[in-house]
Length: 397
Ligand SMILES: *Cc1c(COP(=O)(O)O)cnc(C)c1O
Image (cartoon, rainbow, N blue to C red; front, side, top):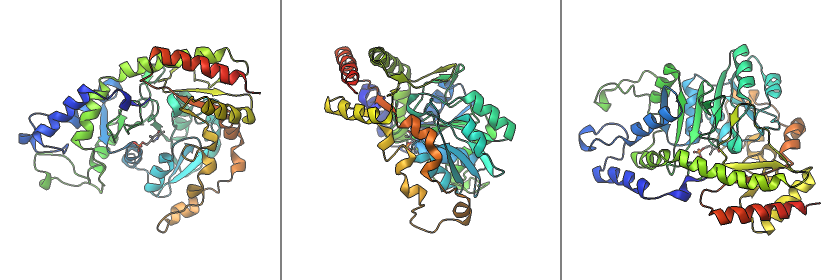
């Protein structure tokens, strides 16, 4: 998955443009910047590739989630439904706004289970946030129908699935707002960075202002700009945007490599009895950043993870035991360990998360192995890896 694997001359050339002018900021300094607007150009390229009216770059994927929700008016006490298999950024972003993250089960897509979402809706629910984990998507048609019938926002976290699609639409563009991360280990990278996309011009304008202290970005004098509402600083720098501008031009090249490597591994594992694969919703195309499969039970999955590591097959994750991606080890969240006092809305609104509620997620994640697909493997490396994986997994009792 990581764009850093294929970092080269085009990235350096883009960064050099910025270094030569010395304008490291995305706004202003028009006369000094030799016509280079890296953040703006990357936004144009992203909106065009994702077929949306608008794209806004920010400082990280976590910032993108925060700004997206803020732009849509989510705030204190509002409930946002998130999956309990995700990255910690999901609940961090919700909490940052004083809103309440409500975790629910996933299904065999490894993303939000629509029926679990429906059950979690209350009068305080404002948004559903599917997270397209490990390269594949949630059932967006079902989730969108639920969102519409309850008057909720659908905000897609497509940080791990950029370039995938659903019913012909790029992931991130299906909901009201979609978010990407360009951190160092994502499919394409800015070093650090993120973006949101939307067709809603009001949300875009809010996001544009909010991510830059509320500046309305009207006119040529930053000091004279008005502030229609309060904001914060989630800006990206021109240096980071320059890296991303080179990388987005290579997105489709990266996806083709991932797909080919993924198919080689998958073909080999299909011959191993007992192994099944994650369900991809009908009409969905993965971005092939991970190959996810299920072992027959939790014990065999734990054994498979150990055997793969011992055979030197790196990059295969057993999320069930992972601190970052699965609810079981999020004690800091479940016990609300914060540095300062927590707002009354969050304190009173946060559900009591007890592991007993998440049997369905445990059933799927407990059996899942998730293998990172690298861009840098040679053809020989892919084929020997595929053969070795199948050999190791065939021996798991
Ligand atoms: C990486 C990631 C994020 C956060 O992105 P950062 O740029 O690292 O802040 C959010 N959600 C998911 C699913 C991610 O994988």
